[in-house]
Length: 322
Image 1: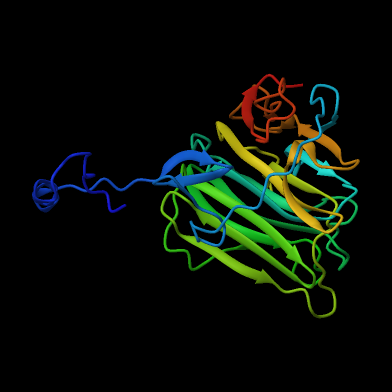
Image 2: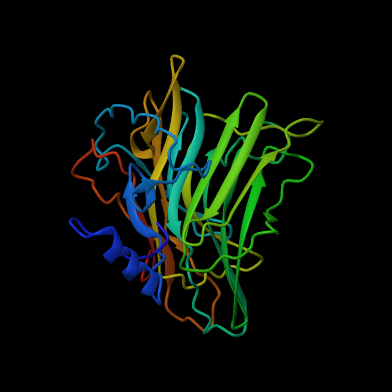
């Protein structure tokens, strides 16, 4: 647990103690393997309460759904466009949306303009509910990656689009440290009149956890019929930065079916949830990149096995999209 040599089978306590006392280097790392969708440290799953020994809620049986024919395509070329997967209008209320990804690094070769992209998970829907008008909207948290005229900038943020008072992206302060490339865990949770976001850099362990105010005029929580894992082109320009690939892992949602809350793959929510793929988010008006680039959401990693519980997929920065 502390990065020191393990006592081997048959090794005497005295011999092992001497080895440990003589050790000059510790090996302390987080393992990027997954246990029921949770990255593991020394074989124990971490969840958003930071309690490795807390029992995992059961994964619900999955109703097979053909990804090849069971989704609708959404194309977008305007600023603030999304690329990823959205489960929309579930019959049963969703109480939590969770996902993992690696904090994307952006290329800084563009020096005349600024570029911004964000990666997020959300509980709720972007339209028509999330209009910043005080109606149930979208609860989001995620990471932001920027190229500001040749200099990289990275940050974490939260947003409640069910608020008509303060609906903008709020960058998080107080985090000890985070790095692009690190493994990120995100959770958006709602429970009665309480909503909470949780965002953690799993590689170093630092995290943000806090309630989203819902009381008061003009504030409301998320719409509980939808969830999403998204890469977004945002900022004041039409330019999408070169982010390489965002590898979403375990995009899932907790769903309350007849009083029982269970964890489901976002690709296979119960009831009549509609599945949408958003992609072809284009880079526009960019004289330094004469070719056409976009964010393109791939199909899930296991399209031939609809009962597989993991909703993992890549969003790629590619050349030559439509």
